[in-house]
Amino acid sequence: MDLEDLHIFRTVVQCGGITAAAAQLHRVQSNVTTRIRQLEADLGVSLFVREQRRLHLAPTGRLLLDYAEQLLTLAAEARQAVTDDAPRGRLRLGSMESTAAARLPGVMASLHQAHPAVELELQTGPTARMTAAVLQGRLDCALVSAPIHDERLAVHPVFTEELVLVAPLQHPLVTCPRDLAPRTLLTFEAGCAYRLILESWLASQGVVAEKVVELSSYHTMLGCAAAGMGIALIPASLLERLPEARHVSRHPLPAPIGQVDTVLIHKRQGSSAATRALLQALRQSGPEVSSLETTGEKPRPA
Image (cartoon, rainbow, N blue to C red; front, side, top):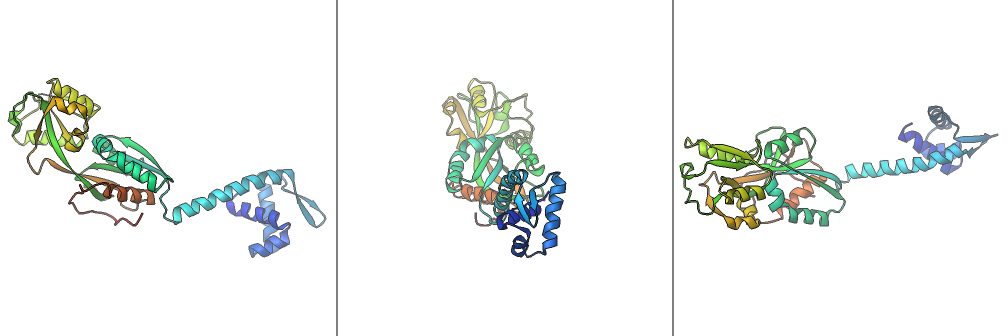
């Protein structure tokens, strides 16, 4: 049973017979008759009651007609959805935790208002995990930290983040890694781009962390830093929103290491209308747009 069989079956019912249906379908009568008989053989039931030269819909045919109407309607909707380029359907978005908290609430609200047919699903995690999920097809797109060097991905810069080192409140001014005390790093799991930046900054002057404590939220990081447990690296855009920020000291990192670009990535071979609508909403969300050049396909109007 395929959609063409159901279309022929419905047309026969609507036209009241093979002859009229064949004329409407621009087919010969024998072809329509054969397709109906093949459909009956496939289902193992009779769809019509045949009396002399006339057809009457059997109870099983009446039941199938209801399903045929639904299936053909859904098929038409699906065809329209993938060809009219209107943003709709499920959009599986990945994001770094900080970006989701500081940048996405307003963007998600704007996207929902402009395109209510888009069903947004959000997952958060470190850059490495989100990038892998896009490549594996488990996410449609993701907001991750640059640089991204993978020819399979299109990369669209959307924000520039200023990274701030946070330490206990009375910690002396930090101008280089040797000023840190204690040298315990409060970070997310391996694969976090900001963790890599912090570790690279320490390593640039031969400083080795005494301990790395992996945590699951920025709230916890700030609480631990305030308690004197260690130091953390947090985007300033998020730090300004967290009430715990008043209990820690802030220390800017030197340029250019303290300026990091957030990019939207998706597979290079194409993006959905929903992804393009999200990109448009991200770019309209505020003045902070990265100066990096976009790589990959040019976004089409959403």
